[in-house]
Image (tube, rainbow, N blue to C red; front, side, top):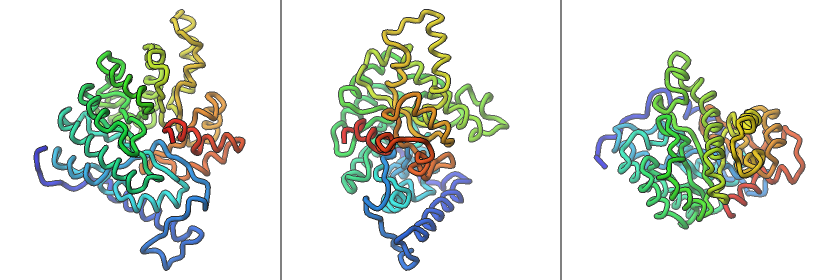
Length: 367
């Protein structure tokens, strides 16, 4: 890639990154067993000291990627302002303070695939994936990786998937829902990629892309004076997931790949709440489906990032406790820092709680 001088992170990110890290360290000092004399070198708690969970929706940005992205674009990614995105030792301390046993590492909505050429994207993806293997090798019981791919080119994406398939710690695939308003994944050119994911047993983890060109409904509808962080994130992202889920069903993709696992973040977005409307429309229009519509709801997994316990309670009742996994969106303003405490606010049996905390993720990730 073209060499250039890395620039400073974008304005507005450094202060929140500092506050997030500072609050995390303050929590360490207040936690049982961590005195003030340990402030400089906090000690990680043992894995039996509190309830633990497997987080399938969190974000990272390894230093090797940050440098390569800066060389390619002339600016550092926003995540470079917060050490929790790239310093694994600091992340491990944070995880222990917040009850997280394992993170499945994925990039954020700032994935670069629409910002660089497919060829540069392929190089960036390989850097992230190699870093994920290294993270797992250093901490095999704490980190797993989801394959990042230069997704605008299905052949380059498949090449990278095959390169890292079976490497230590690689257990999933991470994909944007759409690029520039195009639901690319349902084009015939991507069928070999989906077939390979199914063959490998790697679940698909989705996340929408940031940036005005990717706003659901267009930048004028959800951006403008309302601000991208307000409506694009809170309204657009849930609509993205509903669209992705519906197209997996009506396109026949789930039937074509019956063993393919799909994980929808943000509690499935709007999909669980409009599923009945979608089913009614399909029945009314005599749209042919090989299976009852409700069976397709359970072809997806959904994370717990619902924010209201009543919302999460509805989701679990609708799809079953065996289809829900922990997700936090760490480390963003839209995150959930105490997911284990959050699920304790809803009515669950001990078995249901254990499934959501980690049992379902263990099954999906073949642990």
